[in-house]
Length: 401
Image (cartoon, rainbow, N blue to C red):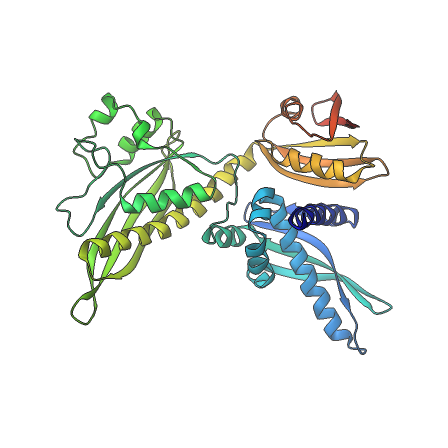
């Protein structure tokens, strides 16, 4: 009961933050994919006549709100709920890491309150990288399907091993397993080689541990991958030792990500990591796993950034006029469900009236396609009546069940 109440308060807080931002004249204007300009109001309380301290607190509060709004614009709601504790630690304790620049536009004192209107430029890239490193799924929509071609050589291997080899007995290396885990945690789909059918294209690549870009892209396209990650990893003994038995091992990986539709390289990484163990094989395995986590995190961040740029190019801005919003909880649910529709890039409430709300949606498609997707949604406590569709907007009425 308490957890359910907490989740409801969280949902309501996120919604009210977005609504308050718009009703207060706060405007989010993206200059590019990596930086978002946000105007936000911050408040500080004057204690003992200390105006300067209240002003500083108001500015700090405004910057926290700016980062909150930036995160709420792209982070899936279920991810916010599941990782709320980690998010509060990352965002509230490190706000300065994500604000590239800010300026106070205006300020005023009212009784014991000091208020500032601040314009802040928030780094979306910095937030994404921080969240990805914490294993928090950033985007769950519109991410590509990945296929790995990683040739791996552990300490005891004479030659590199790879899944597309002659006997196909070696399916996944430790590096690829770790990279796959990082990709899955961040919302990517990863093609399992066990499901692949060996055909003429793959037959031609046997005996080739080091694939060319053209070979990897061609086979990836046949196997319906959007992106192929090609590279190699290796484990070696490192120079550090402790006593007679404990040795260190170094894992290295070089990998690049290629689009299968264009052949373009969209990401690359060169990572190394060290492990310590008494056993040579286990030490090499741990080093390969450790370096795989680093490489997976780095590539996930780069691919997300590039894919998001591509998504932005084809986004249409649509206006939804929602009637029957007197029951605010219904509007909260409608907005949350709207944000879950594949192709919806962002949802923002721009105006609230007594029984009507205006929502701005960035969507990869047209108004009819969005209406069709809404019709498939089950809102449980209410229904919807989409009674007007034009090129740039929808009119929707929320109808109580």
